[in-house]
Amino acid sequence: MTPEDKTLGILKSHSVDFVAALPCDRNKNLYEAALAQFKPVELSREEEGVGICAGALMAGARPVMLIQNSGFGNMVNAIASLGKHYRFALPMLMSWRGRDSETIAAQEWMGEYVPKILAAMDIPYHEIYDLADIDQLDATLGGVFYNDEIRGYLFEPSVWNGSDFAPEKRPAPVRTRLGQYDEPIPEPAVTRYELLQRISGALEGKAVACNLGFPCKELFSACHQPSNFYMLGSMGMVTPVALGMALCSGKPVVSIDGDGSLLMNPSTLATIARTGPKNMAVLCVDNGAYGSTGNQTTAAASRTDLAKVAHGFGIENIVRSANPAVIAEALERFNGSGPVFIHAICRAGNADVPNLTITPEQIRHGVEGFLRG
Image 1 (cartoon, rainbow, N blue to C red):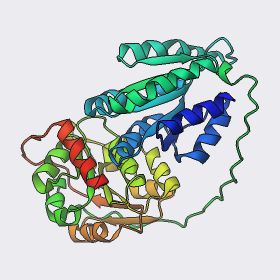
Image 2 (tube, rainbow, N blue to C red):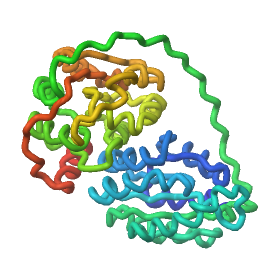
Image 3 (tube, rainbow, N blue to C red):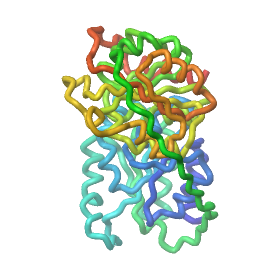
Image 4 (cartoon, rainbow, N blue to C red):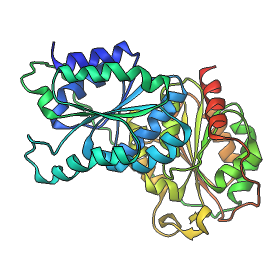
């Protein structure tokens, strides 16, 4: 048995059905086979994979991440303030670069540091050097999902030495060229809270993942429902969470993101375009400000056009408006024709609303009940 066959067999025996992955040339055969044998998401950045897997898990999937260990550094905050805070299970299969067989000196640093970072974060991990060591994956993977654990599996490249495993080659993708998008940016008419109040009816009965800070508090006040996922940390991760929900559920899913948050992780728009979930809408509330930190201006306030960014990443269905009625209509009719990017131009400012009164566990369980029901 090849190490690739053994690894894939173990994943299947533990009912893994979803893989979020970025490639490494040392485990490229496992990468190709995993994409072919499980529901795949080819990531643009490792950090978004944490959010995507969290959303997939709430929808009932059993996800794993397949990455290179050097990318683990991109995931640290998301693992802490999203994965650990909500107790999302996450097995991470990492190609462990920087070891004895390494030929690229720059890889050596993270090869040394990743085990130390995992230990510092109280994340258990396993060092896998050969075929027999892969048994550690089998012995622990069930507990990852049963106990809501985050666990690392460091595959030293020597694991794959001498393997004759040959995955089927995927056909090359066809490049799609989109036309120009050049709709003017309208003058803002309402604040974010006023918008949420006026579109609340269009959000009802949908899974809604909402950006952290004031947006969460305002949504909780304007339109609380069990299907709302309130981000309590991890700025930049709300749209990845919504993407995971959409890919693993038939329910309509809305991400309420902000311009500052979206600028932190814009590559997720490329992943949305690549995966094409027809049941997903990104509602980008663009008020040109970091609202929860004092309304400092973002790049969108002067130079950056996020609708053009979304279109450039490959999302064809774009709606831009400052009119709550137009935005509500877009939210009412997107399901089945998504993904759609709704660029809602708003005035800066936060509403004086109370803090949330529900726990991370209550948030997670409410969303799980909706997505799986």
